[in-house]
Image 1: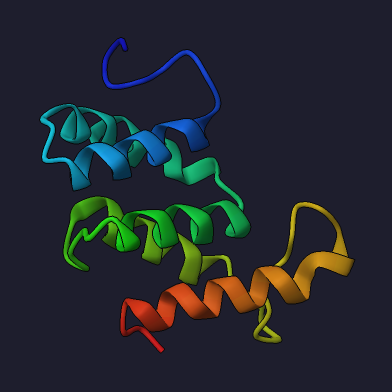
Image 2: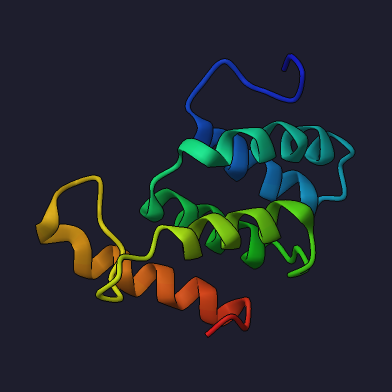
Length: 109
């Protein structure tokens, strides 16, 4: 791990970070520092997956990565209320439901 990043897909970082957070490993904070910088490019479905993983790992709502991911997710909501899927409009319903679920867990809706 270099600078809090693995040489792999970004989702592997939040999955490992969630596990390490749950296990109280100091590496988790390094991963979260790196993740905070990568959230800008994540689509809504990935933000929902990230939030779901980290919330289930027991991270508090006010953790900087959670707050930043929630903010990015809210910014991606379309004017008609849905969240667009990077996999095409046929997946918008799933992405919208996942986004709503994690925002509800964060007490934002």
